[in-house]
Length: 134
Image (cartoon, rainbow, N blue to C red; front, side, top):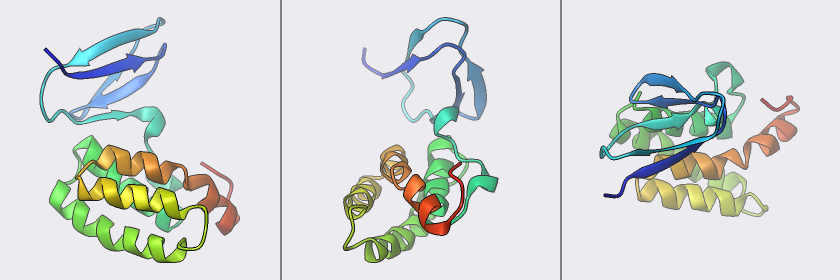
């Protein structure tokens, strides 16, 4: 039987369907067999006070979908124009590929991959806005 395999570091925290889990002092692996479970590693989570600009806003919207805190259809409606705008802003830069990956992931309704793609742009956003990275 297949499922989502999670490899957890010692003391790592994850959110599964709104419930907080913390691993013990050793590395572990666990498999989730339930379809549609909302899983968010807390190390990937962006706190609302860390939102500083358009990239982190888009990242946070994708995070809401991954955590199950927002309806995927409404999150998708919020994300699409934001990613389109980021594509225009970063069109002639090295960040364009990450935005394109995020847009492709959104088309596939893979919000975790949207987060992963945008995460690479968070340090750039901090640098461009002159704010220390979260």
